[in-house]
Image (cartoon, rainbow, N blue to C red; front, top):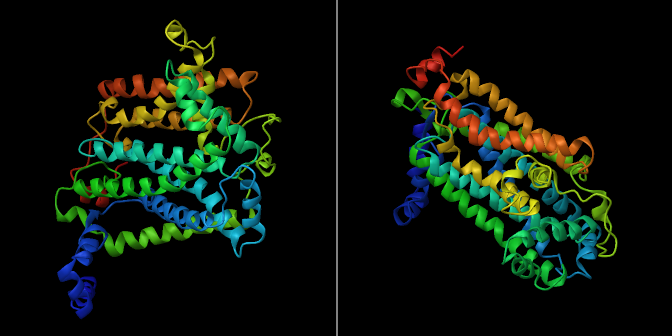
Length: 425
């Protein structure tokens, strides 16, 4: 009651009333994230990672704008301009370390956000479009991060750009033209760096637009919840503010503490030492490694060799290189089809005892793929990567559809309120 009183008192302020009459922004905010937005009363801290991802995006945009003021997108000046930011620009070292580590923490929050959605069935009806927009955000993040990794123009930047852009040459007929377009010439050089800088600056605002659409889609049907049971009435909800805004602020505090630890005490933990060596087209690094958030997809790309069993049925149709490229992009795009691949009527894994085990195996498989991607494609790592890749696609294309048919879920609670007063075993 006091919260409603304070809100109504705020809305009676003369300046607020003047603005509200001409542009109802305060009522819109209240309806979107304030006391006027009802949220399921049983949301856990796993629902914090959406707001944490939003915080990371803001950090990335603000720090990126400042860095762009001092960065020079030219092959002979880029590396030295980054060093100048670190040494001569007031606070430049802090801005750069915020941006460097912010990317890792952005992906960290988004990956947990995605796995939370997979566990609690947040992709099911009527939230399919919400989920698809989320996958588009992930793809845009990956493109932005790749282009940003090239900008310091160190050894890993240059050779990472060379290797990854060369993958498009595997596309029949138009592959070489795509590579030439990306490079702006016939080698990775100054036109490439200019293209990547321009797009890297633009893409965060594209991501921001997708996030706004994502939130719009979320507010159309409201948040899912740990039980996966639909809201039955006012007894199942509480105002988003102050209950979940306080919860989000607590999560942000923990997130920022961990983030600041890496910024101030281990700023290069997620980086590669070779990237502090200026780019040299004549000296290839011993092992070209992408950033950690690309490693699972990199492992899928490398798994497709001539002796890979999944490649044999299509070996007459395409090269192993092309199959790997398709699989790498397909591993992300397949996530957009999960609402239809999962045939179960029950959302939450809390009430799906068999799916719960397969979900954790899938998480473990994803972590193993990341470990494989961090090692050279030699010895046992090749076989482990191929087995993990096979399971990744088997989980999405085979296990999910079959489980939805044969699994017997547990009884669902009658309502969210019932699940709060009598939690499921």
